[in-house]
Length: 116
Image (cartoon, rainbow, N blue to C red; front, side, top):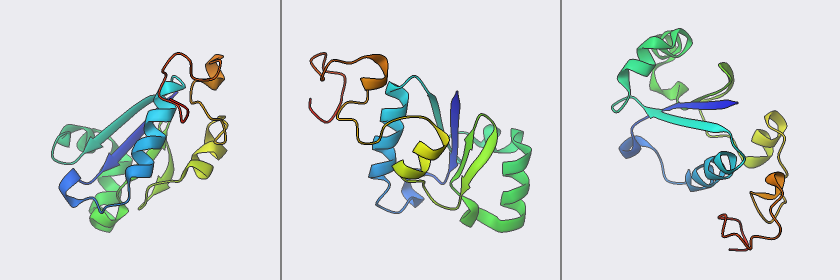
């Protein structure tokens, strides 16, 4: 499973996406391939994805971020919250440990969960 995020350069991103950074880390801990690409660092990715390219041409940068799950657009123009991501990807947002889905026994393995 892959989550691809096409976003504005870090300097252009408004504060408040720290929760999304945390969410991305949790999803990576669950084995999901999370790829974050900004327009300055990965311009070729923006040109190669036809949907991203066409949407940017029509709507401008306000359409960013664009979030794709396995190449299907699931969110545009904002960062999704954990509840919304949980509706696309099976994970327990209330779990004290992001490794719980892999059988973590209470964060004794320093896996980056809330209890570490």
